[in-house]
Length: 247
Image (cartoon, rainbow, N blue to C red; front, side):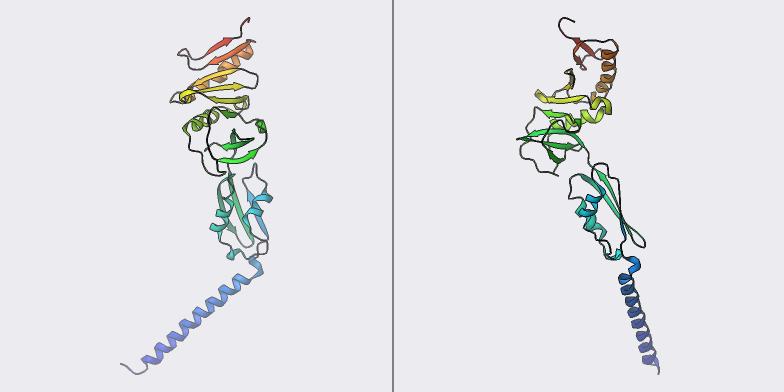
């Protein structure tokens, strides 16, 4: 071993330790610096939920150091609310935290004991309401789904078929629906708020095509002033309008 090598190694070790300690002091200083104290929680994507509710559910306090926040944990806390389908949490240096949410919106309601359950398009129960007419959502009837857990998807093909019907309709037509009745083998009948009955049939491969005819059928009923009793979308002729007796 050459003379002086142990001393050079010792000096390199001391320099390395000094760099490590210096880095730790810098990191500690950054973590404690008021420059990185959270001044604002920016919330976007809310249509039903209020930004204030999302901020509260995040459990992030203003004044916390932005580097001390575990973004994944914040996201998991927010997704405990069944009304939130997805969330993205990010830092906007030096002092802002951004929360972007994608909400589940109610598509229909189910009767459940003495109340009604709002259900999203992916069959997730997201809330309890006392009136089936809440926000003009259609009532799905004809099925019993057993025990429900808010936030847990309902595994029922008949319900999935009914929700598929609602998704396929444009918003004006959707808002006219009062009830979706599921009959034998999953066959679907709609009842509009004016009492008109719409025979949809099974939610098979031709469902979207048949529902596309519904807009045309309703326009024909209105334009001709027909006193219609029902619209049958299962006809091979496209659609059939049945008139009330005496019309």
